[in-house]
Image (cartoon, rainbow, N blue to C red):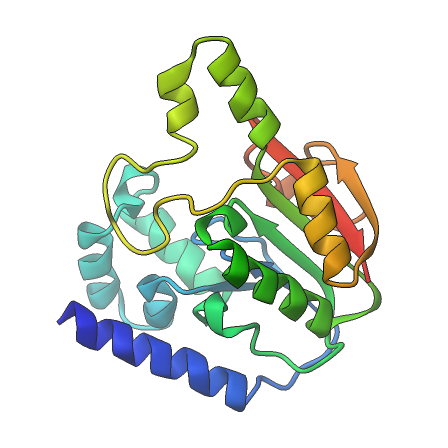
Length: 225
């Protein structure tokens, strides 16, 4: 059953890249889960994206089987799904929009769940869909912070940045880690210019007061096309 669901999701993602969504001047939030922002297109490969517009009886089944109930009441869960703009897409296949159709790209604590080669493909995709002068803000666990935890003897806390405590899906565990120099070099290699280190809720993108939700141990980087 899981293999069949995975196959269907991969087919959907592949077709989205072949028949891209036609729109312009949008802001996209990549790998968002349920950390969303009103007015943005929230893109994720989770199954819950597929049931956002379905009846609440179906939502309740996903709510009970998933991990959302650890953070949200059922009503909160439904409100998030029903009041925001979601697009299902496995981002390993790419971003399903045309060239130079996006103003801003935001991604928080998602890139570390991709292998480096897949992350590089996504950096190239972000560059492709951004308008000239558009900006991307990438938030990831800061490898320098993780190393400092090891140096302070906080080994268990540090290891949580590398490994999940349980296997839930393919995106649960971390597959790569970045500090500013590593991330800056990867973004520059993708074509970005003016790559800058930022701070929590501070930067050039709009709506950071809502988008930035994870401060501790995070690296905030913005890059301009």
